[in-house]
Length: 324
Image (cartoon, rainbow, N blue to C red; front, side):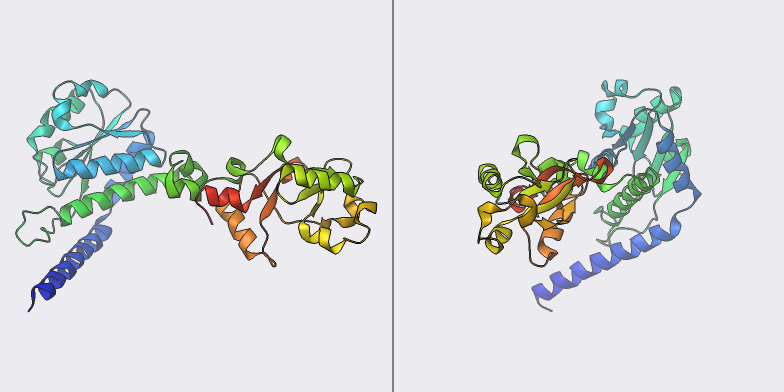
């Protein structure tokens, strides 16, 4: 067997070992998981995550996932906790302590503090008889599957299972709270994810930037509105401000003969494609691309306010935000 073949065989074995470990975890979930989720939901303070070594690295991720899905949480290093950071814990908090062996000495002071001040403690370990698990109010046990290295010295199966347990908790709580993409975006305003979760309201043009004329506006004035606002289109409203049409460059070409003798109503395309201000901008891009023929902008209408136009979203706005 060549070196390349050995590398690939090891990689596949590690992946299979961790997959089997995850299957065992899925089968092991019981009422203790529900108790832990309910304890976190009932917290009036924050969720404090702590662990040392690789458990600490996983703990950082679990804290970040909880925080980004609407559950206030942060990581406290157990060594730092022993040197003053225990003061960060208070009544109303819940502690999630992570240790695969359940015997990490660095966690001792943190565990003792929770017992002394009656702060709920969730233990996460593979050893049910360990000090951590016997002291905890709720025990989250991960299967003892050994490690993928075969020697029990490289945290792999254990860290994968710990991470999966944390993800399961965060997502179960998120779903219970009906935490939706629009909520998720509040915690992820930057990067590609922020762009995907942007709302139409975040990107649209409104107020003085919005091109709009009434049905009886002469086309000479309508052309000025289109030119001044710079989008190549204008919305058309009736006397009470309800959006009834749109005028695009295609409409202008179709009515070129005698154009200046017409009104906006005579030139417009009625019942234009619109979108709501609270819709995701990604949905707006999909509508623009799927329309036959394709369109480059959408008028934004709030149906709760009588179909009055609130803004305009151009494809270029979406492209600048990282969509498209």
